[in-house]
Length: 203
Length: 203
DNA sequence: CGCCAAAGTGAACGGTCATTTACTAAGTCG
DNA sequence: CGACTTAGTAAATGACCGTTCACTTTGGCG
View 1 (tube, rainbow over the protein chains, first blue to last red):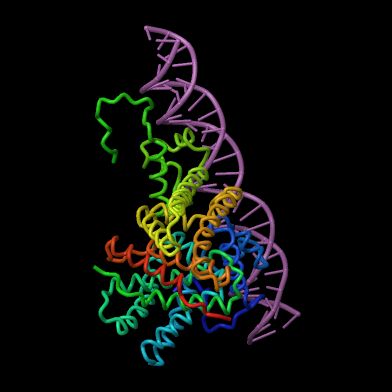
View 2: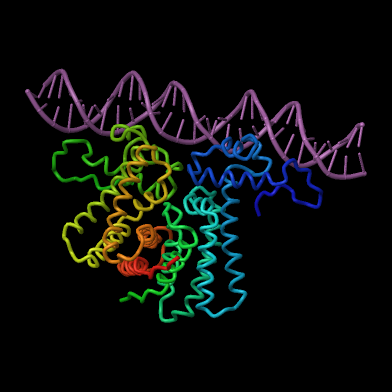
């Protein structure tokens, strides 16, 4: 529930049918490169083919653009996960697919994922809470599957392992290795799986 | 919210001998919580017991405060690593110690490490380059040790694995598990080690 | 064609905030 | 004890930037 400008039953009169998408793409690229506060509305507008103030025809304001990006990321992840769960595979296979999908999405749009990882603090308070909640649910889906595979291990520990595994995958966002993407994907998936199954270093 | 004003009869040479440290600590805490641009000089000053403009007696400006934090982090890591390397242990033991030190430093000052991870984009360009270089050298120390242990694996892949391992450790910065720190330390060390030694998922 | 709403423009507004400046308080040293 | 330097203060400055507003352009539809 954000600010899509009246998508009601009336026929749209559009000059550029996907200006909104262009704005989002431009903003993602610029914010990933320079950071949210270093990018002005004029910069985003220029990169999207309009003037800065024109963005207000598509978004409620600068924060709203950021929120739209975050929603897109978390929704992509959630949908992918739900699709996998709906197939009711064996737990170990389900987990492998969850990892694979996350890796694919991460490597598939690095700029967007980078924004997602870096600019959380710049969200308006209420959106921040809403999105955090969504993210927690996503994490919890991993944890549930892992619970079945490692019933002996404490939930809090499993949650820490899931975060660590995803952290490993996200490490690819912050530097550029020379490793080509298909191979990197396999590496990161293996790293995530290895992390999820380390022996319980417990007391 | 002022602290105990050191009532002992020592004669202070300055008004507050470690005001600089207090500024850094205050800035680290505030920036970790709210983000660099949401924190004003007045906020930092107030939390350090002076007024905003007073910070200019200790730092050249707002970016300089951030730079000092970054230098502190990277220097801590580098010194710890150099100490370990100087002991000339067996490679596998050296690597374990590198991991342990990184985990200890990460969990030891979460707020500072969070700033380090989040606010890289807000550094002035030249400092950014200088610090990135330092960081690359630190990573390279891990890679060199790992090369000895895994001579069959490509350098680029090893670098990716090191980043992934450290990414797993840093995951602890972005949420709070209920897991107590000593146990979390063991978990993250195990996760890092598992990541560094995943079989080479070949091309 | 002519209407009208959506899309885009450019100028003006306003608030925030880092930085500067002139001044005052405090502590050191000869 | 004074002079001199350092630390801290309060107010003023100035730039930047998100947002608003009045206006123009576009293009679909009856």
